[in-house]
Structure formats: structure tokens, C-alpha cells
Length: 275
Image 1 (tube, rainbow, N blue to C red):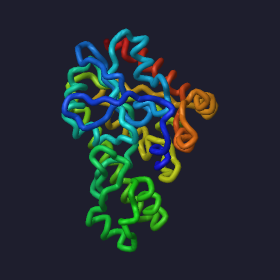
Image 2 (image 1 turned 90 degrees about the vertical axis):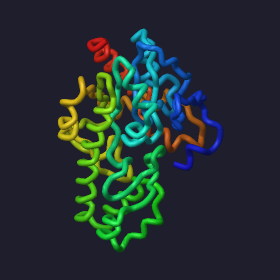
Image 3 (image 1 turned 135 degrees about the horizontal axis):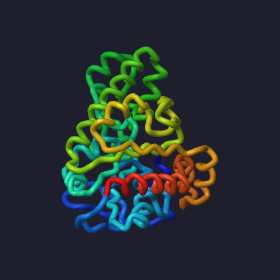
């Protein structure tokens, strides 16, 4: 992930802040004058390496402002704990929540950074007790941590994975309950939710999340929009990304511009039914 900070980025994301939030969002900054649609999510919602990400594409056809509150590598925690974000979403006509992975959030076993959710902060006493042979000072990122835990003991890791799944469902319900507007979940991935991605090293987001977990949250939202991008679409969409030579390794992990176009089309159909 160090590649992200090398050299001048090929895109100007016009970073901006809203209210008292300490988070930097992608601009240009939108006026929070009703009516508008809010969108929260991770790297794809933010639109890393994408000149016109799906929130902006949706805005162009919906004829209504769309406030992009996506954050790179975000988990559920970064939004649920930010009062400004919750307030903006609550005043929106509809809030779109991109489904993010279960690895980037605090749980019974470890804590993550409150704003950079992919950053591992510390292990709990419970995890230290279970994994006595592991030196947790070696880890800075959640995926690195989880990959090492799985390699150390698949049997012990099953407990960690189950905790992440249960915590994700509980945290998602909490987030939705705090948003006083209609909520649409967006599944945007290279795999369908009927098979959970569990490759902690290189697996595509949303990591560990499956259809059973979505079903548990479904009664609390208006709709779940599923966009599954094919390998061919990812290859085609990669050609449309903007990045410098240092950013290329990270860019190759993105879904690409075709995915954003498909997400915008799917969301447009869903939002028009609700607005």
C-alpha cells in the first residue's frame, strides 16, 4: 500500500471535508441542500483512479446532487462513528451503502484505526491468549494480520473468521439504524455473494461477506443492488483508469471503469423507484 504515496497522482481528487468530520472525501464538494442522495463506501465509492466514479455517473443521469462520502479502504466503523456522515446521510432522500469487507473493523479480537480502517492497531487480550506464539507488533494492516493468523492455525482462525462475520452483521445493522433515511445496499464485486471471498492475502472485497449475512441485514434496508463484474469487464475497465507508474500495482486491484458504469446504471434504476 506504500505505492499510494509515491509520486504525484494522475488524478486530482479535489479532496474536501464536510462539517466537523476529520475525514477527507472526494470532491468537488457538494452543497448539502435537500434533496440529494448520499453514498458511503470504500475505495470503489471514492473512485480511486477513476475520473468519473459511479456516484458522479449516477448524479449525471439522476438530475439530483449525489454526495460522495466514500473513503479509501474504509470499513463500517469509519462511517458509523462519524456524526457528520450519519447526519448527512440522515438528511438525504436515499443513502447508498457500498458493502465493504468484514476485515476492516474493530471486533473482539483486534482494533483498527478509527479513520483508516485497514490499519491494525492492537490485538485484544483474547486474541493474544489464543495466539500465544504470534508477535502482534509485526503487523500494520488487517490483511497482513489475518493472513498470518490463518497460516499459524486454520483451526484457531475459524474462530476469528466467525467473529468477523457476526461483528459485520451487528455493525451493519447499527449503521443502518443510525441513518434516518431510506438505505440501499450496493454489492459491487468480482464475485457473487453466494460464495464468500476468504483469501486474506489477495481476495477481492467484500472479504468474508456472503449472502446469509446480506439476508440478515435485508429487512432493515429498502433494497440490495447486486453488481458482479466479470473478469473481461475488469480487464476492459482497467484501460480507462488513470494512474502513474508507482500507482499501477494498486490500480490492478481495482474493478475498473466498466464496473462503475454498471454500478451507476443499476443504482439509477433502483433510485428512480424510490425517489
